[in-house]
Image (cartoon, rainbow, N blue to C red):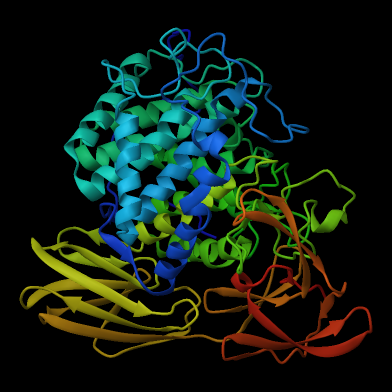
Amino acid sequence: MNIFIKGTLVLLPLISFGQHAPFQLREEKFEKLPFGAVKPTGWIKAQMEKDMRGFAGHLDQIVPDLVNDPIYSARLHKHSKAKDLGNLKEGDIGGDDQYKWWNSETQSNWRDGFIRNALLLDNAADKKRVKQYVDRILATQDSDGYLGIYDPELRYRFVAENGELWAKTTLLRGLLAYYEATQDSRVWAAIRRAVDDVLKHYSIHHSNPFLAGKEFSGGVAHGLTFTDICDEMYRLTKDKKYRAYALFLYQNFSANFSFEKDVQWSSIFNPNYKLSGHGVHTYEHLRPLTVAAFSTHDPKYDTALSIYLKRVQDAATIAGGPIGDEWIGGRNANATQTGYEYCSLQELLDSYAGLLQKTGAAGFADQIENTFFNAALGARDPEHSCIAYLKTDNSYAMTGPLNGGANGDLKQTRYKYSPAHKDAAVCCVPNAARITPYYVQNMWMKQGDSVLAATLLGPSRVQTKINGANVEVIAVTDYPYDLTSAFSIRQPEMRAFTLKIRRPAWANAVEVDQPYKEEDGFIVIRKMFKKNDRIRLKWHTQVADRKDANGAHYFIYGPLVYAHPIPAVTTAGTVYTPRFKDYLYTPREKKEYQYIRNNEAVYKQGSIQVKARNKNSNTVETLKLLPIGRTILRQAAFKE
């Protein structure tokens, strides 16, 4: 495989361009570990604990009307009216139907993040809340297995906008994580019955789940990610019917009309086509295409995946933030003019994780780390439990409009920090609760029975079986803020196995305290490991002066993008509870810097010192750049 890295039932017609490809599974390079096998340590654990004390643990108190809406039990019916979500609907498209299912996304994405954080942190009180939630959800399941948000008069009968598959996807992702971590047989039985209920009513090649008319249908488009559930069900059961169904879903989505057409077969193979959809759909749809490509040997799927990947990567800034403000609109990434949505960051990270697992290509891990350490951490408020719905690499004001309305658009509300963003949509905060546990789960993978691989770097602890025996490896590091790591290996007795540690693309050299080989982007150590063993390594790099697609310069050291922090005045906005409120930031002084060639950039104790020209005074100054994740207002890109 060549991968570019930077309602009414009708018969499905045959599809041109080879899209109606025969089902045949492909070999996947890595094996995803069960959720819970990898635990956070160090600064990642501390960040997750902070989140659980904040928005990730208390969204049900911040927006109780949305999170406590009994949408999975008091289900939608023909006479249901659109719900008041408290958001400003001006500029939204799709009509009232989307507001009927929206709370299922808000609730289930947040619950997915809450479940994963609680179980990984092993907090007794939070785990009790998780079990209570799971028990409530299981109690809503019908005798035929249905889990969802629609009464029998509506379910599986749609020819227009609906959230059937999307509400199930967001719900089942959390339940699958809970099952894997607890091995609760009740939950597994409920999941299997719910998924098989979908396969029965939207039968493969004899139904049309993505038939939604000619109007905007965002919930239907989101529903393509039910392939996430199919992929997980195959991993857990090895029953090929789930992967065959995932291939069918992608084919059916491509055969139907959709405003979210970026991933459709005809769009991909149109050489003049540019990504135009709602960003989060575009980046989450990378997963269904990936799963489809690994469910057939048709080489056209390889080509389709490579074309789509190239387009997605062209839409991302050097900090890993893909255009999503909220529509891509055929644009290329720009540090100042194109914002990225936090939902898009989570979905792109998850899509790259699937590609990393299936292809084994180390470059996808570099892209995951770039998005997580830079764009995602850079859209969090370092002081308050808030995130930015939309953010730019160059961020000169965070008051609602893009850069304070410098582009003339004063109606936008999403460029600010909030624990909810209720005036826009409570979607990004739930995804901010998910992103760190998803990063943690993909930090380690297996390859066959004898290879354990550190695929994403950072402080962690993994417990698994290698060659049938228990092994624990603890990665002790402050990565990405420090480039040294120690891996402590613990096992019942001395045994031989292979440990792989991904070599980042930015690393110029590496020091390892024992013999190793380099293979396919990994440091490979094959040895007889002692009962208690230890490996130490240090990555070497230097300040990199890079250009983005617009000719602006960025400064990078290791995996981190650095930016000049702009001092800001903080103003409180909407108050949700005494503890949780919005925060707006305006610059104390409007000042912009210009790149100079003789900039003498040097890394010193966690910062980059660099010379740049003050555009106001036309004088050269020495700036102290910080990791973009430790900034709010900032200049990260410098034009010549």
